[in-house]
Length: 336
Image 1: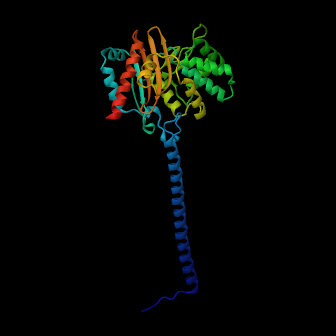
Image 2: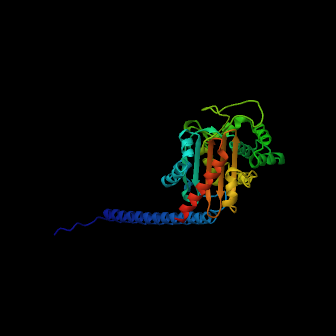
Image 3: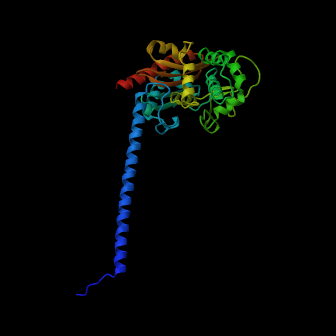
């Protein structure tokens, strides 16, 4: 048999090739090991962050990573919608109001903040909402303070509280004069918030001072001076609860301003009795037959946002009964 003998040159080439392949294998193994180690480190860090967040899920504003938060419009839940539909159909007058677009409801169940659920009735229907859109003035003012465009004086702080807690028109008008209606419109349409979205049937709008005449700038879609949709008000509270309005520190400041409401009617009248230990953050509004209320309820078992917008002389009683039935339905589903 003929045996092939390697020349010295071939031997060197062969040894070099083996060495190169071996080195590549070692390098690949080391790179893979380093990658796995980095992934494990990242996972441990993420788990640590999650665990810290999990311990503070009951404290507002929540501080969940953005990667775990879904936009409100992605939280639509069929089961919650069925519950809300049943509540509406249980009262023929409510069903008739909803059919004529004179009743809008928004509901966000946040008992599991990582898996919040959203449902609504006429949720994109923009209506006159009286004093409820004063929350738009609050956000604009706090944004201006953060940007260094408005000085946070004791008078400004007092007016912001009066505007929300007591719905004081004079204080609100002073705040509007400080920031300007154009600035309010700009902040509501800011891509960070999308609280007024021309492509999504509008939302929160303030185009006139409260309690006096003067310049009026109705919203671009329906020319309403003080407008809201149930969906966008829910978005406001949802972002506020998650520390997404301006930043977590400013969201906390806004929660302080909106907490402990001093007007105990509509939603709050009922909450005072059925959930006396829960924290309540709220803004309402009424003018003639237009009645609006909005609330973030935060307690041991109750964590939800409810918005009601109605055009009816019976609006006060409607709001009281609405939150009573919604609260009962949520508590029943918790115990089911």
